[in-house]
Each structure stands twice: as C-alpha cells, then as structure tokens.
Image 1 (cartoon, rainbow, N blue to C red):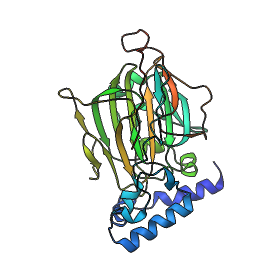
Image 2 (image 1 turned 60 degrees about the vertical axis):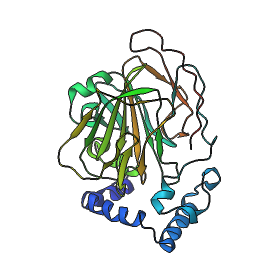
Image 3 (image 1 turned 60 degrees about the horizontal axis):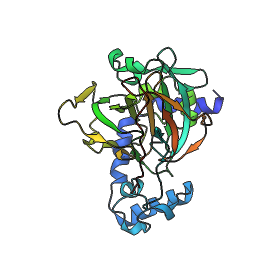
Image 4 (image 1 turned 135 degrees about the vertical axis):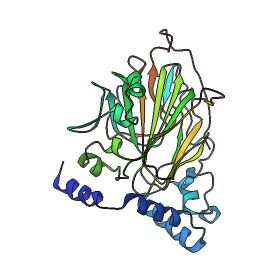
Length: 303
C-alpha cells in the first residue's frame, strides 16, 4: 500500500457515504435536459465511453444521466461464448482478483483478504458450499456497460441485502481498506446451477445510488441496519446463461463464487486484465450430481 493510496482512502472513513449517494441519485435521475446532457458529455469525453456500441447513440434521447449510464447495447455488441461447459463473463470491466477461495478467504489485494462468510452476510451455512472453491472479482469503471448478466444458467435460491459502508472500489481504495468488499453494502444472489451453487455479489460503492435485479427491481435503497433476505423455494425464477440479472445505477464491482472442483478459470486470466461481457472465463468441470456438466451451447445477443 503506497502513501498515495493511503491518502486517497483515509478521508473516505469520514465521509457520509449514504447521504452522498442519495444526493448523487437526485443529480443522476434529474431530467433537466441542460444538466443531464452536460454531465453525459463530460463523462463520455473524460472516460472515453464508446457510444458506437450503444443501442441509443443520441444523448438527447436519454431521459436522465442514469438512463445513459445503464444504457443498452446494440444487438451483437457482446456475443456470448459458445464453448462447451462455458462460464461466461458477467460484466464489462477489469479483473481485480481471480483465484481460489483458500481457508474460507478471498484475496482482495496483495496482503489483504476477507472471508466468504463475511462477504455473504455472516452466515457460515451460506458460505460453506464455497469452501475451497473459486472466485473472480470484476471492477466496472464509469466507461463500462453497467448491466450484469448470468455467467451460467441458474435457478434463484436466495437473495440477501447486506448493510454496510460505501467506500470507493477503485484500485487505490481496494489496496488500502481492509475487508473492503465485506464492509460495503451489497446484494447477494445465490443460484443453483449445473455446477452447484453460484453466488453473484453486487457490491455497492460511493455514489452508487442503487442496485437492482430483474426479478425484484430496486433492492437498495432503502438503507438498512440489519441483513434482510428473500427465499425463492416456490416459483423461483430461472435465468439462462447470458440473461440480464441486474444492474448498477452508477458503477461498482461484482464477485462470482463457485464451489470446490466445480469450475476452472481460464489459465490466462489475471488481476488487471480487461474483460468483456459474454466472453469465456472458465468451464464447468463437474455437475451438481458429480458427473461432467451437461453440454450447454448458447448464442444470445445482449441489448
């Protein structure tokens, strides 16, 4: 951890994270044409947003900045891998960390770890299926597509909303704040898949005004004091690989977890690598019944 990273992180401990996010939400949902067009233009210019791949390219046609930020892509912009037994990348972004869940812990940054139990809301029972499994953490920058899609076909078992702070999730803060992803507010979705349980953890961050899922709508806000959860034993939704499952209203991080001996990541993937939604991240190596995962060839277009 550098002195610069420390200086970036320290003031964040004092900031009123949720109050700032509420304020940012009002700005990003404003439909004042002058304000929202100016904000959109500045973000496109500063971050190098590729509007050529957006389904709607005219900024005048976005009702608000948030409408632009969660924009759809053109058909064909993110073709899904057609590899056998594929696990697809759930988002555009940069790999923060990827690897094994060792001793119940995930790597956050060099010299810093956090436990799967803490990440998943303090429940040992919820974390147990992921012991000695694998994880991948993907950071979405402001220039990225901010809808999240399914890495693997799954049936929803449980959703959990976990209260917390809203530290920035950029590289500098991730390197400086201990247990960052297990401290920030987050939404966990646990699915039953052909590779066993899969957890998708949508981590909030400063200025992230809300997190929503396709089956529930907006999950946060409201700000909460205690963990709340929803079970889906009856009429549980099933989402196919490549289907949209949620979105960040402003940017953040998604963490994917699988159990032991269920998934192998592609060997070339490493921290700092840019990834795109739908590309091959790994392969299922065993189904939930213990045999080889069923052959799954999908071709879906996002938009």
